[in-house]
Structures are given as structure tokens and as C-alpha cells.
Image 1 (cartoon, helix red, strand yellow):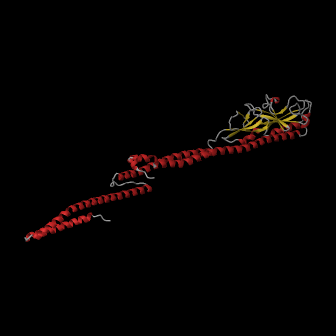
Image 2: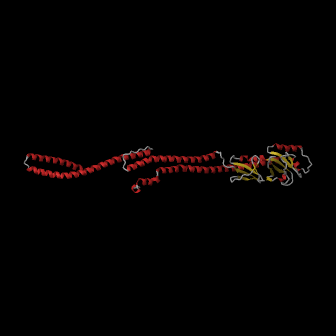
Image 3: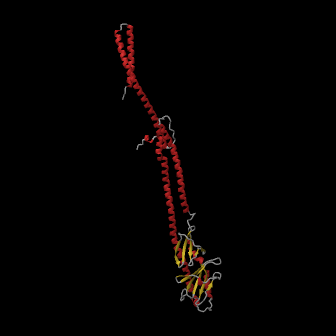
Amino acid sequence: MGINTNKLGGSDMSSHYFRGASLARRYLFSSLLIALLPLSLVAIFYDTLYVRALDQVVESQTNARLVSSENLLRTFLQERVYELQALVDQPGVSELLSQTSQTQLRPQAIDELFLQQLDSPFIYGVVFQRMQDSEPFWYMTRALRADVSLDDLSVTPIEEAEVLGPILPNNERPGWMVLRLHISGSAQNESGAWVGLVLRLTSFVDQIRDLELPGLQSPLLQEPGGAYLTPIGTVSAPYQSHKDVIGDELLPGWRIRLVWLGDPLLSPLEQARFGLILLAFAAGICVILLSKHLSNRINRQITPLIQGADRVASGDFDTPLDVEGTAEIGYLALAQERMRLRLKRLFRSVAESERRAVLGQFSAGVAHEIRNPLAIIKTTVQALSRKEEDPRRSELMEIIVHEIDRANDVVHLLLDYARPRD
């Protein structure tokens, strides 16, 4: 579409008209859009993918390991139940537990059998109660069971056995619990004969140690009383987080809770996440600076071209164009310089043609005004020479006619010069 610059009011209005469509400005915005948009999308996509992948990894691994740890806890108790059953099946143990007389002595072999149980790394001691006994008998140090009444402990059934406790650790003693098995003929939760293993609470909760993810999750074991136990057997205050994972009850009142500790600040994935965001930000700054530099450079190269074109438009064909630019700008400057030189030659040629045209018109007019008088003068002189008798005067008249012919030849040349040609 053509643009009539006369309607725009000169070069000032033309520059104002084209200011909104600046090539440098469009280049700047286009480069920013092309460079920053993909980087921003990649950063947002990676950040979203990172959070989603982290949640999926943690969730999938956690669920599998949570079930595995629950099975380990059940297996630990089940193995101790088997040990209790094997203990009860030993010769003399059932007879000892079935005794109704409190005065009967325990055989030494039974004492040795119970004491052998203390060699297990999972057991603090053995406790049993015979038929009609009012108090149980302990194979355990008095310091561990001081101020403890089994009747005050919670009871959790596990198949044919039951768990009493636990006794939470404090500054004076470690934590423990009793795995109790009633002998045949004795009903659970009623007065009767039973035997129990005093289990180390640390050995029991140590089964959830594999659930610990440093910096991400910390496992806790909730006991029936509501306390939370750490993998080392200590009591911990419960954490509250919407990302906490709570497992199913492995026993009534017993469940595993995975406490969310937050994102790992020093993990490689976290560093890569923030590194990519920082890289996108730095790349954006670099693109802005680079685009600004290129825009200024383009402006510095184009401004002399505009000024040169304005000089040519105003009639200045003598000022050369001096531009040192890139290939495209250099070619454009060279083409504009060739145009200036050709226009200069063209205008000179036109001026010379106009000058000659004016000279021709003037010559034609002068020749026309001179030719007619010369013809009259020649005719008159020729007429007078016929009647002239004086030889000298006749000779002078011939000279006049000859000079008139010479002047007429000059007039003829002027008319021939002024005559238009193809």
C-alpha cells in the first residue's frame, strides 16, 4: 500500500507516523517473546513436574514401605508368640503354671529355662502367674518394674496372645511391654495362669526405622495411650501436617504415622529446580540486555540512512553517506549511496537539458527576428546595385550582400540548433 508523505506534513510527521512500527522495537519485543516464553514454560512445567514427581515417588515408596514395616511389627510379635508357645510346651512349665498352691517351690530347671530367655536381645525378662496367684513372679530387675502395675496397663489382643502396655521410657528406665500368653484352660482378661515376655520397646519400634527418609519423613509409632514413639524408643510430640501419612491399625490402637518434614533443601532435585528457575531468570535478563544492545545498534545504523534520505529529498546530493554496519545495513547504505550519485547525475543532466532547451528557444526567437530584416536588407541592396553605375559603390554593395549571406548562414545554424529532434 502506498503512503502519500505529502498528506503527513513532511518528514517530522512521517517519523511520528512510523515511530510505533519501529523495527528495533519490534525486534526487541519479538526476541523477548521468543526467548522468555519457552524458558518460562519450561520452568513452570519443570516446577510442576518436580512437585508431582516428588509426591508420586514419596507416595509410592511410602505406601510400599509402610505396609512392609507393618508386616515387620506383626512378624516381630508373632515370633515372640511362637517363643512363648515353645516355652509353655517345655516339660514342667504347664505343670508349674497350673499349680494352685502358692507354697509349692519352682524346680531349678524351670528357673534356668526362664533365665535363658534373658539372653535374647529383644527381651528384658520373663513374668508368669500361676493359678490363684495374686501377684505375678518376675524374672527381671526390680528397677525396670518399679511402680508398675500390670492391671493398670492397656490390653491389646493379638491372635491367641495379648500385649500389655507399653511402659513408656523416662529418665530412670527404658520402655518395655509385656507379651502375655494364657495357658490352656485360662480365659484371657480373667484371673488365671499365664506367662509373658517383657519385650524391649526399642526392639519393637526399631522395625519402623526403614521408613525414615532424612529431610523428608520421620516415622512414629502411636501406642494405644496416644503417645508417639520414635524408632529409637523415645517419646516424641506429635507433628501436625496435611502431608502426614497414617497407616492402618496393625493392632487395635497401634498405628504408624509418617511425619512430613518438608522439602529437602540440599537435595539435587531441589537444587536443579531452583537452578532452572534462576537460569530462566538470568537468561531473561541477558536476552533483555542483548536485545537492547542490538536495538541500539540497529538504531545507530539506520539513523544515518534516514538522515541521508532526508538530505537527498531536500536536494542535497553532495553530502556522502558514511555507514559502517552489518551486511544487510551495509548493502542498504551502498544502494542508497548509488542512488544519491545517480540522482545527482540525473539532476545535472536535466538541468543541462533545460538550459539547452531555453537556449534553443532563445536562439530561434533571435534568429527569426534577425532573418526577416536581413532578407529585406539584401533585397534592397540587390535592387540598388542594379541601378548603380559607380563601380566602387557596386563593389561595396556586393560586399554588403556577401556579409548578409554570412549572417543568414549563422541564423540558419541557430534555427537548426533550436529545431526539435527525435
